Image (cartoon, rainbow, N blue to C red; front, side, top):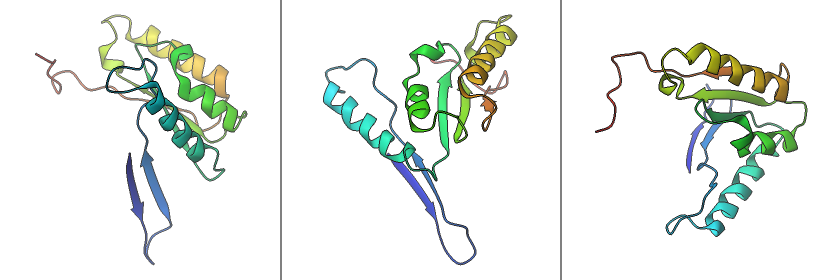
Length: 132
């Protein structure tokens, strides 16, 4: 877990917490017990009414496979504290980008209404080299 805190007389109090990803499929090194610990840690943060939830969704994956959204909905059904972050938009098959992004946005809007909205992240061509 990464936690960054800003404090001092010239700052408003702000903490940014990057929690570990939710485990969907335990392995030898990331056990089901680890998954429970991570889920409980995340739940503790998102139940705090002062928390803004940055719910990260992989554009290549279906919304129903994204556990963070059901956890966010349980914490606040109106979606007023959730920002949907759609990542890996640059990995969607060429020609399907617009359709896939619109589908992701529609699903997030249906799920959380207007709330805090959504953001998409795409790396511009030429700035990222594929893995070997």
